[in-house]
Length: 267
Image (cartoon, rainbow, N blue to C red; front, side, top):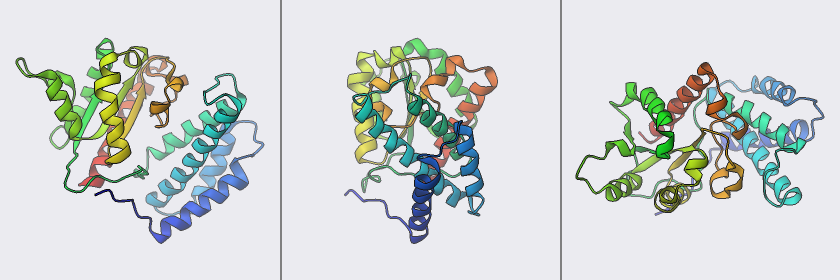
């Protein structure tokens, strides 16, 4: 049975406030830099006392920006991203600031469906290209302190003699959080495209799984609408390859933090 998420009256009020703030202050702000828009947004957040309410407000603002960015792309660029477009660059920068702020608050889920009744999803599944193995090792390192209560799975768990396709299929069927490590090699992998992404994306669309995307290297992520409908942890213009050590560590810490919040909501 598929259950639509319910919204409390308080959440309805906060989302209405956020929608109005976006229309009045952010949609056509006239500010020269996105950071100025973000400063106005940060000041507005002072009106909300709990982290949960701040997160709801930011979540609504993010969805409004993403929706208008999509409409702009559909109208002006045939549905595709345009790296030279000033409007898009401004929107992407503001989204980056907002997502960094959201990462400090409790996660607010707005998946289309909650988990189907009777089906348990509690696994963290990492989808990656073997050519990006070094990044998987880094992420494993960050999750290692929490493996006592996080069921973390990647294909290095497959033991000799096991049917590897069956093991991957079974892991996907139990996945609550799918971490996609995106690069050109990831996007070009036939196995990922045919065996991993379709069931993961279906689980996100229909069964409450959550997609978390990390852009590892410069790639044409914007050319894959089935993926770029999900907001990446880092913008395509700031791939992990371009980050210094501290930025990379902070991103991976946020990835673990976000994963834990998603799983705790189910606990």
